Length: 504
Image 1: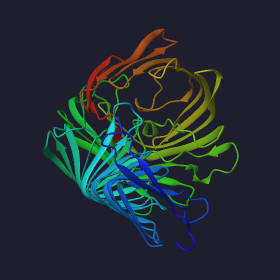
Image 2: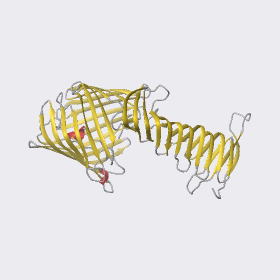
Image 3: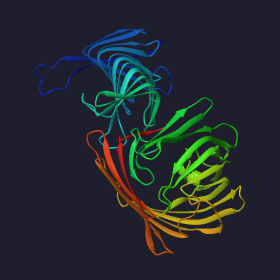
Image 4: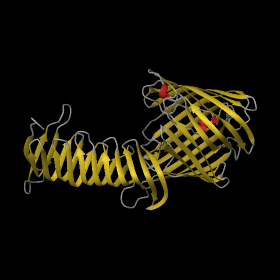
């Protein structure tokens, strides 16, 4: 560090009195390049070899904003900017803490490597902390890689669940990707997977970590779960499996292909259940494709064309389409997609080829008043059948949301369907020409309650409702769901992990 000036200070440690106070040494090492922060090193003893090394022993504290490192011993190589620390090492960052027996830390890049490590990262949700314990960890502030590691949100030795893996990649605030996975429940291995990805944060995106138990609807009783696997060339495989009393086992899978082409395609075999006024109705889709216009081709400015990356679900299968979360500063968007395949409906036993095209023009919700959002959209879809005929639906839609507090959310949406033509399938039909949906959700760190009602304005009655309740127990949150649509009653039981959901 040629020409650098190192400031050396002597200070007294703070305490309740002067008795027993011991001298501590503090040095300030100037930045290696313009714009970088200086490094402060404080310990009981600090020795300096000019332009080469700074050695510290005894309650070492090294500060390089925004990071702070604490250890019993540390050696700072002034030529490389790397600190080698040993003895109860704690590296504190805005995203959390990294604890280990030995640690190597680059003050310029933020890269760190440690052995016998424990990482603690607070989640956006209250009372949730992500824990990673492993033989070793390395990485930067944006991404860490742990080997022979364990991931959980349960503190202490007695954990409800944990994910043990050969390798765990952690992106704070985004997700965890584990390879060579064993899922542990109450300390016992229940399943082994080649790969598992989990989203971190309060949003419930993707499938849950644990399956959902379903009672009622089409299968009387069943267990449902979903999965997604990342493939090569920006592709994603996704699917679901239902173990049911009626069908024993059923499921489906599809493949997403995203790239520079302006058309994304999902293809595969799917079978989906529905309860649209027909008890026991299922829809079988033989090898089929779902296609859409992705938002990667959007022009600059306030208009977005296409839908952001999202999994194909029952809404796309039936024909509805939504843009999902808004991107950047976009104020308007036009989304389009569709599906094609041969469908068989049970128990009506209607079978026909079907081509469905869907599009929507949406305006970004705006706030006329504090905590109040208003939105509007125009949706359209048209289905064409191999037996002849078509079925079209044009839907103006108005929505409103009110959030009087962080815990409470009220939502309302009005839809008016303009229907033309005929469809042979029950699952294709609109339930009611005009509908009003009302929902209230209350969620705090310990429990969640939800009520949703759907009224048919022309019929003048309630034809769908849903009640949900879940309560947190330690690091898990079991819940129950009661629902009815068209007289078809059902019960669901779920198990959430606060701060964690399934991901890509």
